[in-house]
Length: 386
Ligand code: GDD
Ligand code: MN
Image (cartoon, rainbow, N blue to C red; front, side, top):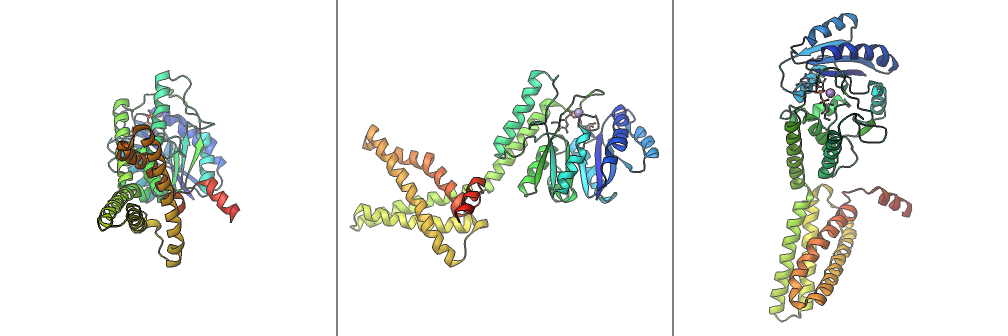
């Protein structure tokens, strides 16, 4: 397959002079399976980086140069990737810094993962076998590590350890799918947003650890404060949108209406002379039916159960989960009112629902009822049991 290693440059004259011969002489000859090429994406660097590249292009026929206006690293990558696919016929794209900070000896390993069937491979500095420069001052190290832990936590996606790094390989399909969603991320935020969108769309992503070495020539182009603000803004906004579209909000609305159905039924039937326990139980079952139907056809509609025979099996299971909620509520009410008296009952009802019933039932729905979450040890267990 045709591989294009994209090297974005802004004032990297001395570095490009060192890096390209290493790639051509030491790295590319190790790769027999693929057709290796280089694309330098230069933004009219004032130091004349482009002229250096032109000299190298005379020596090696597999190098191309794409120049344009400086609009940031993300913009340069989008332009470069488009050029690599449309003009060079690339199947696989690499993102590599031109300043030599990325361990190019790892390039064959990235390709191996692509050959194994992964869509995207990200270099990680924060897994075993990876590192950030020893000589970085402590605040810089701490910042880099904390930022990545924060991003993983906010997204709730822990399989990727390095979200901000710029050493990656990807199939062209990943870029073509995400391209239009990335145009607003022109700076270094490109890295986080691209990876996040690729994960959301279900692309298979692998990690390769590497040692990130310090720059020996020239200066970093990153503006730290602006970078931090932009990354945080992206992470928070993207996560909020993700949650709004996730089943959780719909599940919560459904549950709230279900509660009202329960309360109104209790009131109406009680006033018609039914015993409160019976009136409450009828209300509860109506609410369970409502919850099952709405969650099935709305909240978890992507995973909905439609075959009547399956519904027949699922509905008792759903009732069993509801029974669990009932046990939780009565236990919390019993303990709460024991210590704080019967007048605290409504407060403890709210506590029971918010702290225990919601996490409990949402988890049960996701794992057992609609099977949206796949817990690896549980699926193993299910396999061995039956
Ligand atoms: N064409 C172009 N246009 N290239 C650029 C631009 C731009 O606006 N800005 C930066 N570059 C090039 C640099 O010349 C270099 O080859 C590469 O992009 C990385 O830029 P650096 O300025 O060296 O970035 P860094 O080392 O501070 O940042 C590293 O860490 C970031 C955060 O983890 C890089 O690995 C980034 O990719 C990463 O996002
Ligand atoms: Mn750098």
